[in-house]
Length: 158
Image (cartoon, rainbow, N blue to C red):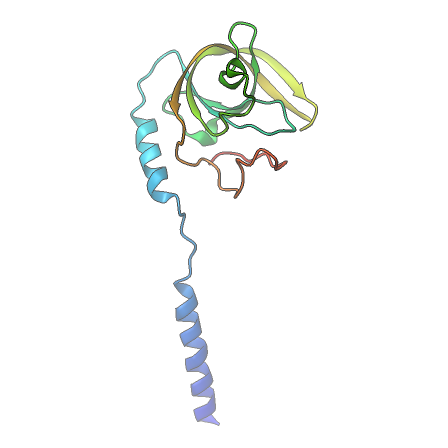
């Protein structure tokens, strides 16, 4: 009897040791570390960093943050394109820049815009200009498939 308990205990202990090594690591850790270093090196200035987040069913543009700020502080925005068209609209290819990163020039108007498909209210950003920064930047979403334009998931950056 004592031998059986010791044997069962050893088996359970072996399983615990085996599974304790199965911690899920962030597969994007290396690229995220590089991205954080890049964010920290951004020069101060009168511009914003924007990440296009295209969804077929929604009309928001994507996330915008200030230089040197984390993507976790970024705000989902509606673009006011009266002065400058969004990059994809300017090309006549709506959503073709999904996931791209831009240096944006403009300002927040202080207005909030209702987007009916998401039933959400988003700050309005008046776009005055942009520069393409990166067509395949480091991931900013934990949610798998967050950049899939067909999925009705509104992921938040981390």
